[in-house]
Image (cartoon, rainbow, N blue to C red; front, side):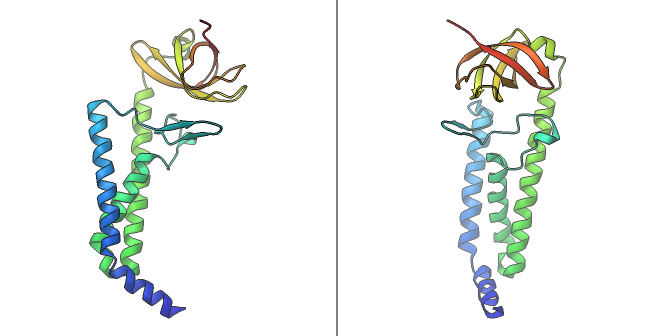
Length: 194
C-alpha cells in the first residue's frame, strides 16, 4: 500500500501538465466571464429549465441560509487556483497536491462569500416589500404549482430577483404580476392574461 502511495506521490510531483491544464482552462473561463460581465452580456448565472430545475447561477438570495458554495464562478475559481497552486507546489508530490487543493477550496469559499456580499449590497436599498407588490415581472426560474420559483421584477428602475409562488405552474419567461407579499423575500404572483 505504501508503495502505491509513493508511486502516486511521484506521479504528482511530475504532473505539471495536469496542473497547467487546470490553470489555463480556469484562467481562460475566468477571463471570458470577466469580459462578458464588463460588457454587460453576463447576467451572473445559468439556469436550465426542463423536467427538473438546475440552477448554476449566482447567489440570488441575501441570507446566509441561502449561501451556495457551488456556483459557476466559485467552481471556476477552484479550478484556476488549484491549477496555479499545482504549478507552484506540484513538484512536492502529495504535499504540493494538498496545498493546491486547499488553495482551490479556499478560493472557492472566498469567491462564494464575495458573491454573497455583492448580492447583499444589491438587495440593500430603500425598496421595501410594499413597493414590489403590484409590479410586473418575468418568471426567471420555473414556478411549480404551490412551490417556489424565481421572478425578476423592475422596481424604481432597479431589477430585483424575488422568490415566488403561484396557484398554477408558470414556465420560465411568462409575464406575471406580484399580488401579495408572503414573508421575507417570498411573494405570490399571478400570470398576466393577454
